[in-house]
Every structure is written in structure tokens, then in C-alpha cells.
Amino acid sequence: MEGYSAIVITPVKNSLENTLETIKAIKESIGKYLYFVYDDYSDPSVSEQLESNATKLEYNYIHLSSLTNTPSPNYLTVLKDAQQKCLAAKLPLIIVESDVIVQKDTFEKMINFGNNTAQSGMVGAITVDEQQHVNFPYLKFKGMPKQPTYTERSLSFCCTLLQLDFLSTYSFEFLDQGKDWFDTTISYKSIEHGFKNHILLDVPVFHKPHGSRPWKQLKYTNPLKYYWMKLTKKRDKI
Image 1 (cartoon, helix red, strand yellow):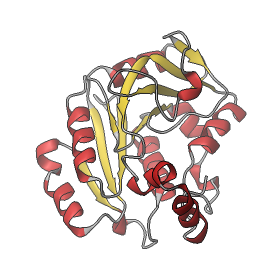
Image 2 (image 1 turned 135 degrees about the vertical axis):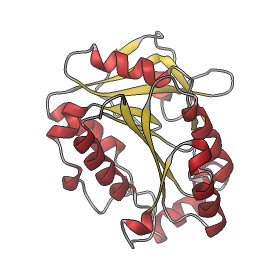
Image 3 (image 1 turned 120 degrees about the vertical axis):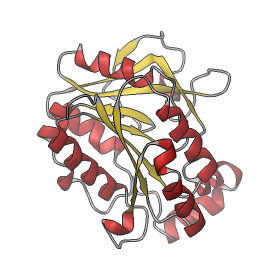
């Protein structure tokens, strides 16, 4: 699609304050992007706010009731719809979760790196805390030189670019419908199909861990309750 550099998506489940911060930062990004906010059955008051802000903050609002009647999480539905949009528009996909704040040049740097790197499949921005220290989920890269780094380890979808060539090669229709989250699987599929994944250790984004899914904070505050919910409610299947 002429003039646009990528399609950007943010999946949302409640967490309105964090989400609006994410959206406002994306609105200030350098470049021109098609932006979609996917509302995965948030509480009615949150959905109303997300829909009413769409015009002012310049994003396309999609309530997942228009795509599926399955209770959340519906990340697979989001990914499949986004992939179809990218293929139709011939644009790469950038996923930014609703607990991440990008910088004005984050997308520009990710896209430039991907375009200038042979066999690029996925490009992730490193996540940091308020003190600019590497934080979850990229602690495995802590202490490494601040430069683009090839990796065979999985990339998170906190802030990640999926190249059009990869999206054209592997269909998300083949993903396991029994899972909830797909960053690990898709990272490995990129490599399996001959692409290379990189983490940009010199392109930081501010991440509030689990801010998009507050119930997961129980993993640290009340681990017994977290694993009980994970088991009995079948949540967080990776």
C-alpha cells in the first residue's frame, strides 16, 4: 500500500491506562503506518473508551466479536487477521503489546535494519525498565553489547517486526489452536524456513512486564494462585 511502511497492531485486554500510553507513543512514531487495535473482549467500559478514542488517536479499532465468538485470549485470531491484512497490502507486520512504550524512531530503526539485512525474518526491539536496564522477557540478553544480534532463541512479541517475505512463506493457519501465545513457535518457524531473527540491543523500548495481562503478576506475588489459575483455567498455554 503506497506511502505506508508497515502494519502495526496492538492486541488489548482491559489495562486501559497502559494501552492508551502505548497508542499515544505509536501515534508519535516517525513514518506512516496502518495501525489496528484489536480489543479481545475487554470490559464494556474499556471497549467504549478504546472505540471512542480511535479517531482522535488515529487507529483502526477492531472488537474481536466481529471476528470470533470464542472467549479471550484470541491471539491466534488476531495474528491470522493481521497476516491477511499484511499480505493484501504487501507490508510487514509490527506487533506492539499494550504494556510497551516505543520511541519515535523505534519503527524506523527496525524497518531499516530489516530492509538492509539479508534473509531477515523477525526483528525485535530490546525491552528495558525505567532505568534503561534490560528486563523481562529479554533478561537472557542482559550484559551483551548494545548492537544488533542474530539469535536462534525465541523473540517476544513485545515489539517485533515480522518481515513480509516470512509472512508470505509461513501461514499462521498452521499454528496450534490449543495454545494461547505464539511468539516462541513463530520465532522457530522463521528459522525453520531459512530466515534469520535479530534482537536490536541498541533499540530499547520501555516495558511494563505483564501490564497487558495483570493477572500474571500473581506469578511473583502469589505463585501458588498463579499456577492454580494456569492449571484449572487453562490459561497461558505457550
